[in-house]
Image (tube, rainbow, N blue to C red; front, side, top):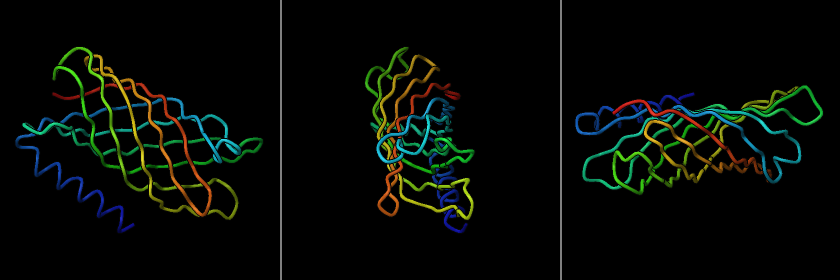
Length: 170
């Protein structure tokens, strides 16, 4: 729990430190989460969503962001499910005119994820997560695809997220 408090404190420090000159936007996403690899063998297609806080610092090329979310999959042929809560930070690089109507972007994020299996005798655990992404912005509409991956004890939790969201802020 102390790790989570430290992570959130660091995020709020970053927001407070940069808020005087930075442009801050919130992006709320949701969509289908498609398991791949080992994870696909035991899970059905799931759903999930995320909230990103983006910080566009003047005179700096990439946009920095912090993100949290919730993803859930049903374990095939059971009444149980898996859920993953990612806590990440990263960068997005936008191509095109700033503030343009259509803008392509690429991004990447690193962080930790809380894994929880809703199965008997299971405990939640924290693991390292990484995620590249690609997306397009149409004014305040955000459409993106993310690949997210976690390795744990020889098993890989990985999935593609196909998401649509809304951008709030200046």
